[in-house]
Image (cartoon, rainbow, N blue to C red; front, top):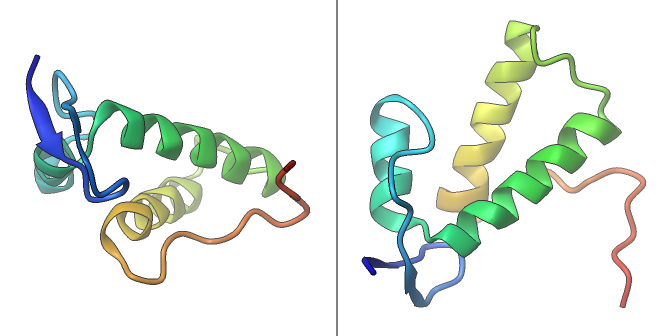
Length: 89
C-alpha cells in the first residue's frame, strides 16, 4: 500500500491509485491527497452541486468546482461553505 502525507487531513494515509483529475492539478492531488481526503472532497462536491443547483454541462459550473477543489485542498481559506446545510452532531 502506497501512502501520502495528506494535505487535507495532515496524516500519512493511503494514497490514491491514480490522478483523479487531469493536468497539473491532478498531479498535485495525486502527490498530496489521500483516499480519505479525496472522499471528503467528493462528499463536499456533491453538496455544492446539489445546494447550488449546478448544471455540470455548464462551463461556469465546471470552473467553479475546479476552483473550489483547489481551495478545498490547497488554500488556507478552504472551499465555500454549503448554504442551507447544518452538520449533525
